[in-house]
Image 1 (tube, one colour):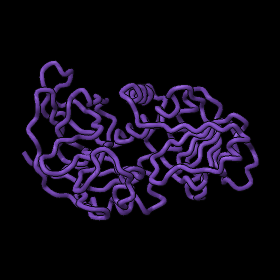
Image 2 (cartoon, one colour; image 1 turned 120 degrees about the vertical axis):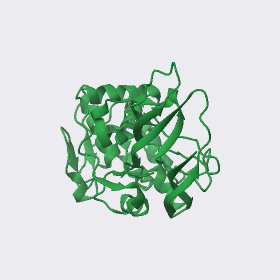
Image 3 (cartoon, one colour; image 1 turned 90 degrees about the horizontal axis):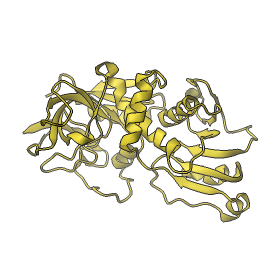
Image 4 (cartoon, helix red, strand yellow; image 1 turned 90 degrees about the vertical axis):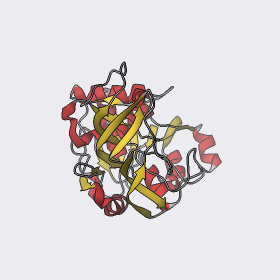
Length: 312
């Protein structure tokens, strides 16, 4: 079996290529991908060659963990049927290249237990479920407090803010340094960091910029918490005396769990979480090179989606 996949042969070198697929196992489903999202966090690190050593790292690789598609084959007893719309959180199904994270391909093979059935009408916005689940995991993890300050108004920051409001929390403040990205707030306030003299008890960083960590510690209430809600290439470091004085706590939030995916799906289906305005750009999969460049360089591009329909 073969398919077209987005292949990253080295940092900065990415294009669609034909790759070999392994044969499906007894618990695998075969999914034809309709849309896949481009991550401006982990995939940008892979693209720039700044990804820290990570299980499965190495080139050439197929990226992508934000895919939605249609079930073409499913084993009996899986709970899935041919024609179901599903979310695919990546796939390690290639014979000669690495699947990190493997979802950016026309056809993938994946254990059915990892697939999440979706409402057929969700459309391309379904690629945002992974990021929404990651935001939900940050809010719903162990011993957490809802944010009163979120740093960064990209897709992750917007999802954190929307989920906080949906959970019944007080509307958080969001800091954003780019004036063009201060638009689009729904039920909360976005402002520039300059001029804000408030302190906060729970600060969630969605900017990916660790250079601001000392500044954030200075804005904590005593005993407050900073949550690193992104994925970072640089070592985490900060000046100890201000953190000592504040008795600061630091929490790292990992990727989603199955429970997060299912919770986000319910919020979307019940109308409590709207993703429609967060997917700002879409390109055909055969324009992948230009799509990745724009996703990583254009501030107006909140989220880029690859359209696999019509590809082979």
